[in-house]
Image 1 (cartoon, rainbow, N blue to C red):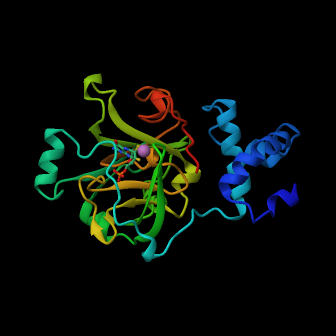
Image 2: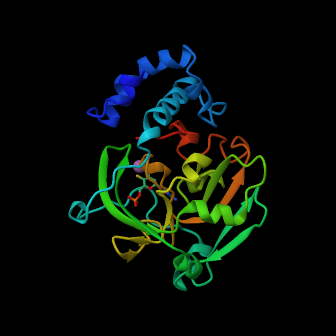
Length: 263
Ligand SMILES: Nc1nc2c(c(=O)[nH]1)N[C@H]1C(S)=C(S)[C@@H](COP(=O)(O)O)O[C@H]1N2
Ligand SMILES: [Mo]
């Protein structure tokens, strides 16, 4: 077990792929840490739960996603999924430079918040140059800047029972579906309080463009592209995900993708 943990010459991907069976063995042979680490196991299928448990276990000593340097920033960062939010409300907000936009923080919190873009931009910000990996098979590197999510949640104060953070977006990726085509995503509290989890208002030093999710998008760096919610309008703290939209915790999860999209 300790030899596995100190094998630093393997890539994370290699460890995950090659180590899953071994770690599965550890899990069923009763490693307490593995068995108790994930908060979301109930929600997940067992195979997916194992992946998350393995990752939490393996990454416990090196929990940050890789950060790159300025020279690595991609010249072209594709716009994928929605390229804008097609509603009158969003158009009006955009037209006024998001002056009247407010991020709501609601649900299982002690003090619901409504934070203007100016207030968000005045918060201490983190900048990180990371690689975005889309399941469709492309990657791109950019610098993202914005406040960490953790302190915002701490300000709102979590109620007992809050277990997931849901990001409600402005765009209907499948408008024909009458409300359930609205983009949304969710993460657990481990990722919510992770230091690299930020609400990015700036990309490569410029205000976030409409294509990339203006006025803010989530960056949750240890997960795949579809978790990086654009056009975030509201954050909701919940105890369970099965009552929201299709019940699986995200737009793509409702269509079969895994909820825990660890890289
Ligand atoms: N609101 C919203 N967020 C979204 C999507 C979307 O369609 N709508 N697409 C997701 C997917 S699959 C990817 S790969 C990235 C794309 O981000 P980009 O347009 O900045 O490349 O955003 C993710 N977040
Ligand atoms: Mo994606």
